[in-house]
Length: 136
Image (cartoon, rainbow, N blue to C red):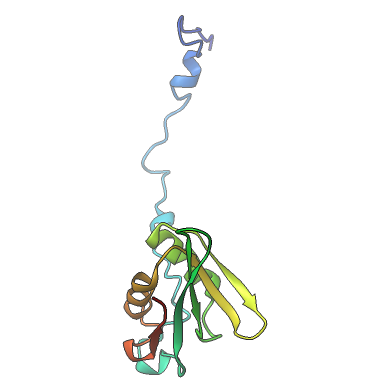
């Protein structure tokens, strides 16, 4: 098929028009299956909650910048999956840091204390009684 160059844009007609059409019979919707990243953590019972306290703290960086740290989550949970979901939910950056004294600690940019408390209780990872919020 000869391609024509459009005058002003410099694009070829073949770049704009598809070479073959995909029929609806060939299309698959397998990617629409839902995946629960917390399926391994949530068992559906109160026994799935962890035993100890979860400490949510705020740390002052430089100027107006702050860090929110979450310490004390159970080792059964995949913390990297939790951070990934929090980053999407709160539109902030975050990471998992290995602290020598406290173990693995979640760090989120900004003051996310209220957000992280609501998120953890909504997902069923902890109860409201297990949360201990520190900071100014």
